[in-house]
Image (cartoon, rainbow, N blue to C red; front, side):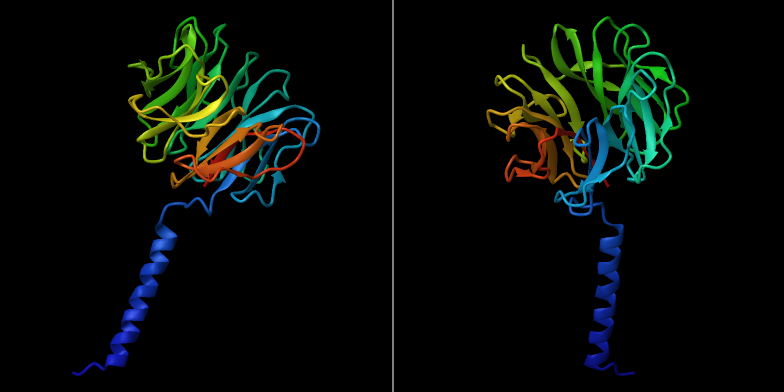
Length: 295
């Protein structure tokens, strides 16, 4: 049986169309598809907002007289965990990405906050001072099974899961200065990654697990740094006299969002992962900060 050239071309077009649909539907979330959650006091107190990656469609998610801040997105983008003082003390809350279903997860009289989802969304790491100093805890994403991971007299804060879920990076004051540490998911093998008299804070893993972005004051002001996960090759990405804080990687690892007072007040910026093309996303006289990418 003979097949015409025209028929072969139609078959080729059909196959390519199917492949393209599969690539775009199955491929990981690109930076362009992602959103950024952040905190702002533009309405008189700190609330959680979300926006597109270009800064458009800035939408308020929480609305109460308390302060809501430090958002953390679930891996599937359906939930946002955040810290709130609406109960008279700091607690970890969770809500749907549209702001509905706001629920207190930690429910105790001490201070709990700085939540971060595990890669599969089943766990949330957070800090708590329920043992009289700030320590890293982990719980199921419904608030059950709250377990302490660190146990010393210093302050431990800002936990961040590695993409494979086996490690947690965090900051600690146990060596007098504030440094970045890493540990296993069960709290074992706590290892120091940074070592200088300045403050190194707010670690965040890259999506491929090879890098950690963090904030350092080693240059006399806050700057966004990046390093390998063993602590080697620490590089300043922002390099300006302003204070730059709180890095968050895009889901595809190509971008980093951060907050800066570059323009006289804190605003959300985005840059390439090498520090180039630093671009302002928010623009108002209020404080906009603590960005977190959402798939």
